[in-house]
Length: 475
Image (cartoon, rainbow, N blue to C red; front, side, top):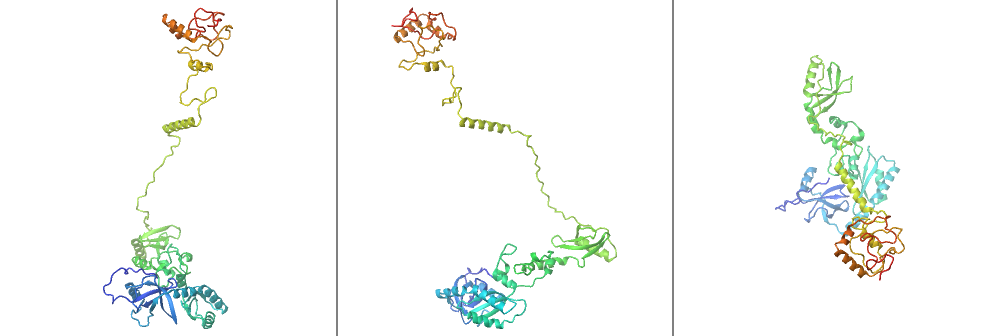
């Protein structure tokens, strides 16, 4: 048992009255004993100390000190001032600890060899554990046996085999489980390996009082015996069952004899079943007593008058959900979704023009019928600047005479004279402006062959002066 020292931080004014006994644990806590601290050294929990052993010394670990040890001595009925109590010799040094490790390493092999020897001697026993003293002079053999075992010959063989002083100690299945340890069905560490020290007998009557099904698998622990925890709440159940009527295992009604199957101490109900059905009828304690009194008078009631055991807690109403799939259209969300998809598509795929070439970066589409753009594209590769003004470029018909302007460029001549003629024309009543505002001549309507068109209808002039025929080159 591991006890918590809840008094270790409390100061004590009188050091003479302090407890001089220390609890020491051996073999990882599987065995504990009390030793007197005559040297009055200050030991803390977890310190390794060397104590008196059987014909030698042993090494253990301090588990409890102070006033809490006095409470443990009182619990186990040990006299604090017993002169035969063994003493603490010193703190363990390196030599003691090394010797302890060497002898502890012999224990697994000793267990295997001792079991083989017991099997050879045909003894009905099981060696559970072997504990060798720190100095290697004594060995304790823990065994399990159902009947009495004559191991006088076995002790002689063990002593000659292991060269130690042999001590045989019989333990039960619960003590073996406590030494092995483990996790119970409750999810916690076994009670017998943590805090339970005395093992009381457990029988199936404890399970019947608590209305538990007699299932050997569920009621048994790791030791193979009934679980010790069946006794924990047994007294509470026995106190609660005193309020229930006695000799109420069967009651008589018109439908037959009802048989008691369960007692509920939490709701104070007694459950009965009729022979003609498997339905269970819960009855109150007062109703059962009344039926028993009627049966004692020779009266058989018609009904059991079972009570309703439905929970008085208001049942939570689950919200009802309606399937509205296809009835409501979220148009705004769908519209935004379509717009987002279109924008993403425009970003990923650049738009194409009619000729198969992508548009210019800028996001605005220019008109294909822009006359300035066509004139700029048809301008010859030279140093001559483009013509001023917004006059559209007229397309020449195919039937133009040979003396016309050469294709794809401006006529050769004196640009200065052409500019002076244009200025003179603007001064003479704005004829040039009117000519610019007139619509261009459509293709397929050329003038008379050999004669130039009217002013402003045929684009820029061909020569430098007025009155010259179109076929005559300019000076």
